[in-house]
Amino acid sequence: LFLAIAFLVIVVAFPVLLILFNAFWVNGSFNFSSALDILKEPETYQALLNSLIIASCTTVGSTIVGTFFAWLVTRTDLPHKTFMKGMFLVPFMLPSFIGALAWKMLLSPNAGFINQFFIDHFGFSGPIFNIYTYYGISGVEIMYLFPFVFIQVCGALERMDPTLEESARISGAGLFTITRKITIPLVLPSILSGALLIMLYSMAHFGTVAVLGIENGIYNIPTLIYERIHQSGGSFDAIRTGTVLATVLVVTAAFIIWLQRKILGSGHYQIIGGKSFRPMELKLRGLRYPLLIFCLAYIAFTILLPTAVIFLVGSLKTYGLSFALSNLSLDNYKFILFDYKVTRDAIFNSVTLGFTAAVITMFAGVMIS
Image (cartoon, rainbow, N blue to C red; front, side):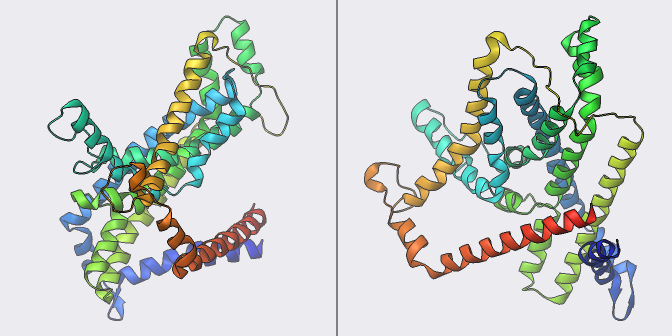
């Protein structure tokens, strides 16, 4: 117990206290007025509003997508469910930053490949898609964050005792009634847990907004912190401004956690775990293969298309050329992967940090739980 408390103090409490201390400690004393002046700036209000808009849209969209696909692969007779479940986890392993770069190449209003395709082949006078918007940023984040909800809901649905649903069905209740009054309330804690993770992640997310938002003047709190420090060349005043802005994220995260505990604490939930059950499956009948095609199309759109674009653009001899075979070459990959020392160092650092973090997190999680 002592080790668990000490670990939490070091990795959680100490950084938070350090942020708060640096935000309000000025010239040897606490000074709240200068911090309040920073928080009152219009740019801070706008960045906080942008963070809330993007995080809210991302959370709602990811929750709907993740819950729907989780229900589809656990409670229906969808073909190839095991394969589909594995494919829906792939976005969880891909950096959303790289996905944002791919979608910037596809849907930027000036040179996006999809926009250019419609202009060249369908006679449009200008771009029909603009990725540099709240909807574009949220859409990209949804593609890569919905597995947070998907994993949670899949686990809950697979562990849930189906006798309650079967009893309701025998009593004459319809599918909609069973889902609304039994299934959703039982998996609601898992849905909210996944949604909470997405909300917190999106509020503090830097990469997607940096790639797709800054170009159109859309800043969230993390990108505003980066912009202030970068413009000042890393001065102490800018770093202090960054810590003040970081307190906004700390307070927001604390409020979200409190809200989740309040919502879950006000209800009564009973979900069976540990014992193996065979969930009740809904027969899709004629919708089996249309829904399978829909799932495959979603995977192709969110995983294969961006990945293919990244690979093809990396193969171009000069950026801006068409994807004709004569314009493609593997020389770029040969140079980056085998001849460029920085890449080898980066791969080694990534593997080392990833492995170390995984081991430490595993032992810490087991110890604390």
